Image 1 (cartoon, rainbow, N blue to C red):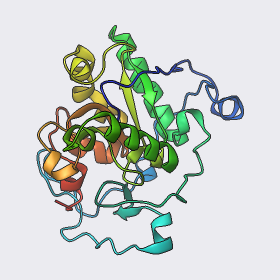
Image 2 (cartoon, rainbow, N blue to C red; image 1 turned 180 degrees about the vertical axis):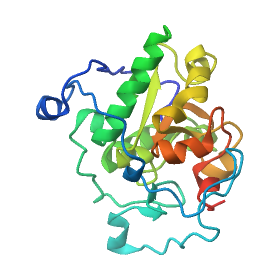
Image 3 (cartoon, helix red, strand yellow; image 1 turned 45 degrees about the vertical axis):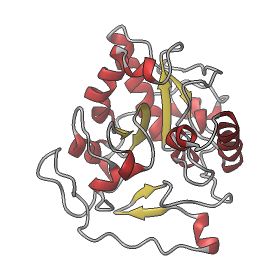
Image 4 (cartoon, helix red, strand yellow; image 1 turned 90 degrees about the vertical axis):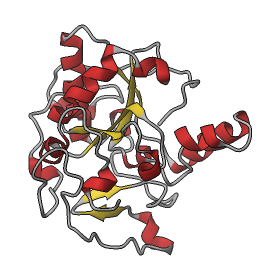
Length: 251
């Protein structure tokens, strides 16, 4: 997640090249992959009957009982990683792909590349603004937000997650923008509407839908995309208001 007042843009790469060559190249290497298998992100045991259903995973997901060194690995439900204010990870959690392009898992980066290319074909400019963030980076970002926005910290806590509570630390999520507009301004762009309609076809969900802050702990962020794989994302469908917590039976 990012604040409407953040600045530095990121350059995105959308050309097609062989995966083997791309992964051996620098941090902004081009990449093109076949669509990832649904098996890459296991689907929950029970499928939703319609995208509007709010419980498609196990009716009673396992409790998050991790403490101490067990926080070095994220909480999962049905094979799906959940990192949030309610399910945190430690500073020692660092995914193996953190040094890949944008710190994203290779299949996530490939899916993001296809999504951005499809948007460009519709004359919509979209780039990756922020991908992986380490625990330390998130901690510094949160401290700056708390210092910048006065008490009662409502704004900072709406758009910033404390260290260990951010999906960015997983390398499975990223923020997009058009290179100019952020926050509410981005939400009003056709890019935002296009993402809401089409992200699921590339395996992504809008992680923090409008009006779900009481569930997710984060305000509406139409720019924050989370990869769950095409099989799971299809259960959300276009313009979904369902949260990952609801889908997994956590809310």
